[in-house]
Length: 144
Image (cartoon, rainbow, N blue to C red; front, side, top):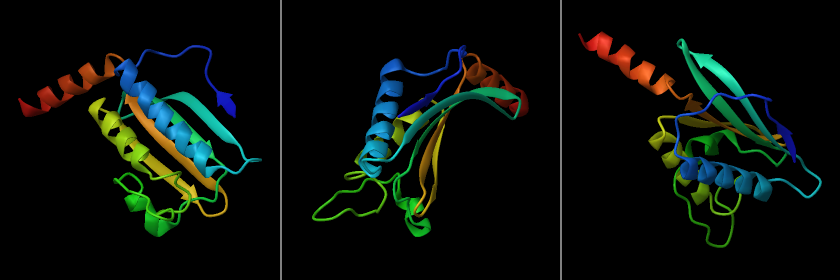
């Protein structure tokens, strides 16, 4: 496992336990999808979108990847019977639906990019503390 973390990071607008659960589900999924000799990377950086600052958290694996036709189903609740329903997603995939719900409850966004035979990168974008308030102010100005 490789960590790519900045020395200094702005505080984010998120519940600590929700953030822990998001990271646990993404890392468990990456661990399940990655072969023994594979690599998992946890990357954190600041990103600006629409003049607002966010923290981008990415978990990348060197698993088999997820087929393009399966990408729309990655964050839905799945249950495993005798075999994996989506190749490249660890275990049942239920953890990913939980990660999505928790991310959205923190006013964030989650998505996945994947390439067959190369691996997948799950990204979570969360507002920096104060950015959520600035976003609300911008929306309020637009309504007046």
